[in-house]
Length: 480
Image (cartoon, rainbow, N blue to C red; front, side, top):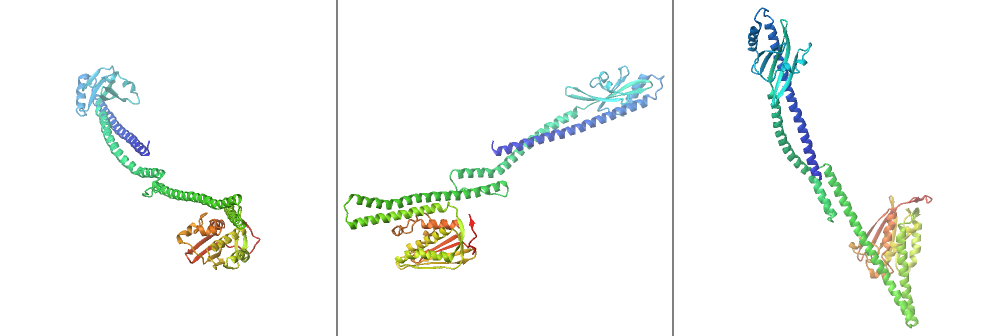
């Protein structure tokens, strides 16, 4: 059953029960009040009849014709009593009717009403039903002049019971009307309360079907509104994750395709020239040229393998960070780079001011060597590379600049992708595979640093790196 119908039927049933209980209680209270009023009034009327009878009959001398005078006196007494609503009957001790104003119902003398009389309480009442008629009988014992009489008053109280039935009928009509109106109100209220839930459910279905732009409307500040807001936050997060996964899949596919292509090109050359050496008669110059092609392509494959291995290992191995002296680091870089750039007549300027970097020595060295090598590949003859560094608060700031060919601004965010090369022909000619900047990005992330790349076509590239600064105490080590 839907939540809407649960609310509707639950509240309708609850209100029906409340109305029924309240109506029965109210009518019962009204009936009991009217019934008690009839009893009190009947008892009072019976007492008045007894008192008047005893006062008047008790004064008669015994020598008078008692029966004739008794009847006359009773008639005089009744003229002052409520004869319209009550009937009066007098029985003697033997049960004979001495007087009766009207015959209503049966004589109570033979009923259990006499057994209810006692010395302490010589009055009693009883209700006698006959079909749909209800008669209230009162009886009391009276002793006058040595004789015992039973005085009976009777009243038809069918109207009290009829009023109760009328009230029940009227209340049923009122209750059904109220329940009908209330059901309409509950229906509308339930619809309003569950409308947001229905909308949220529909939005969820659309989202599940692939419409990831679907969002729930947030109306008000109640729990449903908070649920809708939480759903939207979840949807935003899922959409971001799906975009990331899609991008990761794309990068993985690009990586696989690029890797296969990077392997295919040198392997084709190696296989081709090897087959020429195996099948053809070649002079010394041709043999040397073929061997040179095989060697250079083999070195390219070797470089690609080392880069891939370093990229895979760098994110998984345990890193031990140390305080690295930047002056010593600059001397080491100069010593490694100088022989390489000397052949290409490239100017190299290294100015790392005194300071400390908190990092792993080989990874930091690999970071700067890759940045410098990337700058070298972008230079023409007689270009220049600058590497400068200084303390910048809690970080050590290093800049690697070149005056090479630069790159378009819209290409900058792509250079950290594996195998991505702005100029593929030039990069392959210089032995590149598009993994250097990917490795640099990974090293910066591992060291919890950040970097920034600025480049302009024909003007060169500047790469700024901020790495956590270390302290002078070289003995301190921090493992992560």
